[in-house]
Length: 103
Image 1: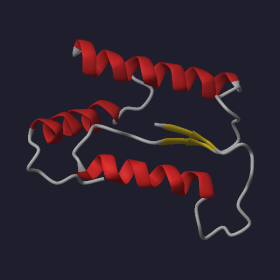
Image 2: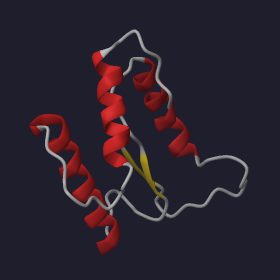
Image 3: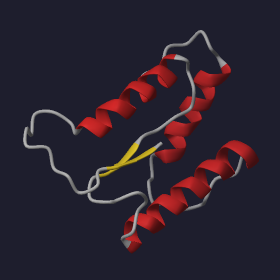
């Protein structure tokens, strides 16, 4: 899951932005069902990442995700060194529905 912040900063620094809270409910529900899901937040992006670095990261992460889950392949040097270890754990949890999610 990817959520954009639309550049609107919350005045209360102690709470997350409202649009992030709404998607966090969905994320929590999916985690409780042991579904493989991650949430990435882009605080300054609009409908989709427009800045070249954010767009490239989003596209690469999505490509990595689909290759991992559909093809069973992993990139030799991913940008996020921990992504495959997290995803392997998600795969184990989704294969064993009786286990509880740690996210």
